[in-house]
Length: 242
Ligand code: IPE
Ligand code: IPE
Ligand code: MG
Image: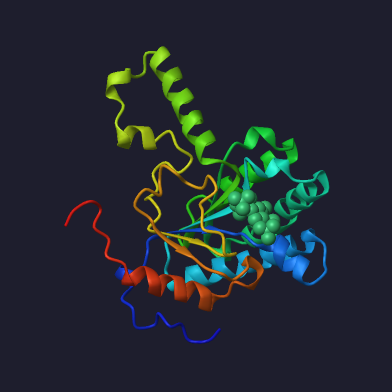
């Protein structure tokens, strides 16, 4: 791996939490006259490389958008191919303790095949406590679904007498989200040229710096990540202050 352009940047200046919308797999494949599924396979390889690179940089949290609640609109063969990648690939990436990555899934697991749910839960259990990096894979994730799910849970807790509606505040509500106990993303990167967030982390991203890039996800390299972080370092984050 070439020397990072970030070598001179003090670690504490780097984003603590990076969000990545892994978009452009289909276009990458189409450009080569290949089926979209080949683009997804290539995108999964890129994901593995970027996890390694984030760990090397000392990034604490990486959240990747892998399958949205809207992606069920796609053809069944494509959905099956994405499920297969989830089955085969994550296991490969995260089973080794030496990878030192703690894995979480964000999203509604209950709509997925039972073997996938079990695999997700096992990988979460086995990787718990690893400290190298926390990787959140947003799969069957939608920001609006997450907020509704949280509201439903909160209402249940109120009905069970565990809390009252007057007690809700931002901090407590965050505890009902899939990202509970994690810091909000500092930087969200979307490759592929699209300039929207497509239902990715709406609650958590209100003060994230957004970087849109033209590169398609399968072509995304550590160098692209450096470029996005350098852009992030130029931004003045005021959080509403002066
Ligand atoms: C992102 O790539 C992967 C998923 C949404 C699952 P796309 O499949 O959206 O690729 P494009 O946007 O069609 O190129
Ligand atoms: C966003 O990409 C979802 C993921 C990358 C998993 P999409 O390709 O689904 O988003 P739109 O349709 O371009 O907004
Ligand atoms: Mg897309």
